[in-house]
Length: 277
Image (cartoon, rainbow, N blue to C red; front, side, top):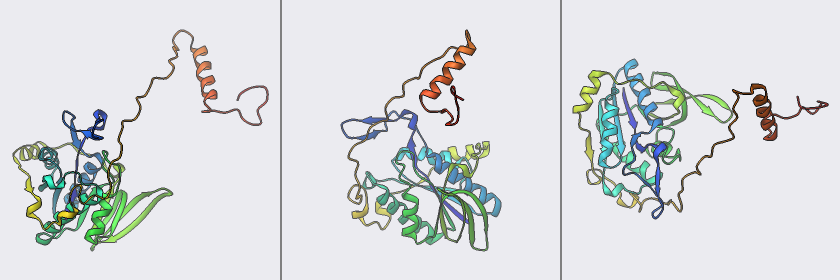
């Protein structure tokens, strides 16, 4: 079987900085990582490859330095990595990004049919959760979103357990299909030494806009109907009150309980008399 994973390199959100003049993320000097949700998508694709056989292809859209994320992904056991890198892609919103990735997936699919496309639920630098569904819509693949478990894969069908607002749901789709995943889906592995050595020598394939049949009006800022009006970091968290419980444990405990009542973390029972219970 052929598993394809869409993977994005994102800035480490613990060190995100924002340019106040342009309202954009400052990426220079900020460590980059594989989008965590995409890492779990890759892990699941590799697990299924090990279980049923086949290959894993990774596709990413980003600047040239994103190749480091692809090389790291290869160290976990993927077989092929493709980087879509071109100035024409810059500024793409989730709609344009889905278009760019879809055309590339179609090219791969033409020569080596894809059975399952995996994407993370969302990218932590955007949180839209729109790119995966956008790809599925353009490909005409059924989509299984928010997957937390792949229950079965055989006879041309895939069955997953997915998270919903109301609880859990089991859904089944005919292949080829697309799955977006939650972090609960699996536990990430450590790269093996042979795969690390292989990945160190591996050079991802570079595909530019001109090498694919793109409609240039759907790329980059020109093809993005949404734009960022304002972006700002969340307010810094201030420390709460500190209570020393070493000198007077009982007094400290009473003070903690009192503050919990004040903030309605715990409340007086409506039937209680003569105090708090």
